[in-house]
Image (tube, rainbow, N blue to C red; front, side, top):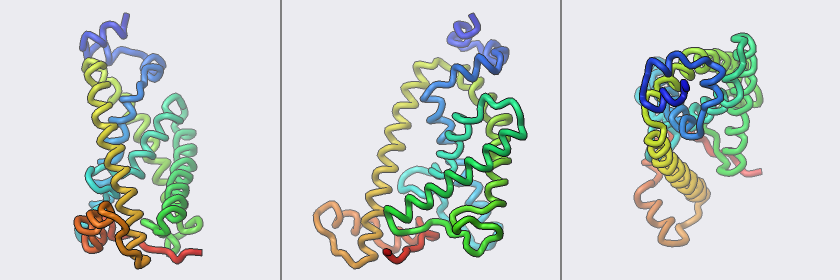
Length: 232
């Protein structure tokens, strides 16, 4: 009965849905919006952090076409999927800290493995783990997990149930397509960037086009923290 009322856009009914019922109604397209919101928050946070550090304005989205920082977006989705039914804030903090550190570590490892680059290196930071994450950053992920689960997630899900779910599903498909295209183009362009740094000339019209529109100046501006590693 409650869900039928929600489908009729009764926002007050959405507010009255028990948390357990709400958690069971998390749909795939809701995760797309969570990814986007987490990604945008991450981009804004990293941008402000660079300004406070005195580094000036730095592109922090980590992709070519969208403002969604994929590390924070992916982290937000993982946090919600794994911790949304956890009732203990201390457990959410602990699991979020460990999980956030693992996600950051894996993404750093995969970037170095595939592209031979690093977009973050914490070797000079306190209590780092192979330079890929740090204990203080993991504690930050724990705090972020508590905020995501208890402050953002359920109010956001209730808000989304204010609208027709068929419309949200359609918008979710469009946004998912944009994210996939963006990530695909980003990976291809980054691979070519790494290859170009190794001195490899363009091999076809695709790589020639990439070199023309996404040259070294462009890439250094949009991926300023990316450092190339020596192949082993």
